[in-house]
Image 1 (cartoon, rainbow, N blue to C red):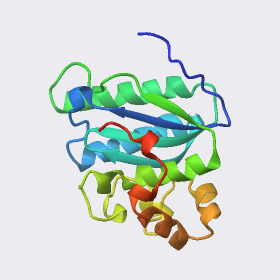
Image 2: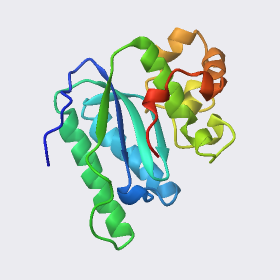
Image 3: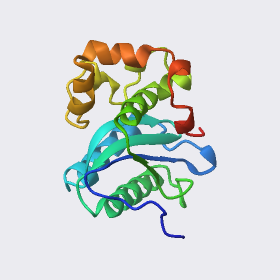
Image 4: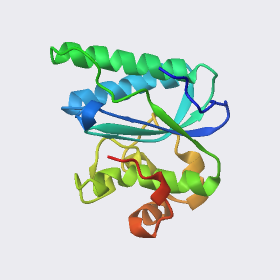
Length: 189
C-alpha cells in the first residue's frame, strides 16, 4: 500500500474518516457503535494520541475531528481499526476487510474550516435522513455540544467557546446546510 501523502503534525487539527468496503455497513447495531467509541477512547485518548473534538459514527462510515497530541497517531488509528475489525469479524463469523481503505485525513488549517467541519459532521445523520434533528442521533458528539448529554469523549470547549454558548452553537448547526460554505468537504457517502 502506498505511503500516506499527508504528514501528520502534532498540535494540528485533522478530519479523519473512513467507510465500509463497497460502502457496506460497518455498524450493525448499538453494541457495534458503543464498542467503536470505547476503542476510540482506548487507542486515541488514553494513549494521548489525540483529542477528539467532534465525531459522528454512521452506519457505513465515520468522521472524527481530532487534535493531534503525539507522533504515534497513525499507529494508534491502525490499532483501533484492526481491533474493531477483529471483533466485528468474530462477532459476525466473517473474514476479510471491513473498511474500503486505510483511514483518510484532511488537515484543518483555518478556524472557519474547523467550525464548518463540526457542523458538517454533526449534520451527517440529518443529511442521510436517519433523523430529523442532529440531537436525535446518539452516535455523534452533537449532544455534548448542545448540553443534552454529559460526556468525556469529545473536547468541545474550544469550538463552543467561539459561539459563547451551547444555544448559539445549536443555532449555527441548525442553519440550512445549503448556506454553509462546506461543499468541498462533502464525503462521498
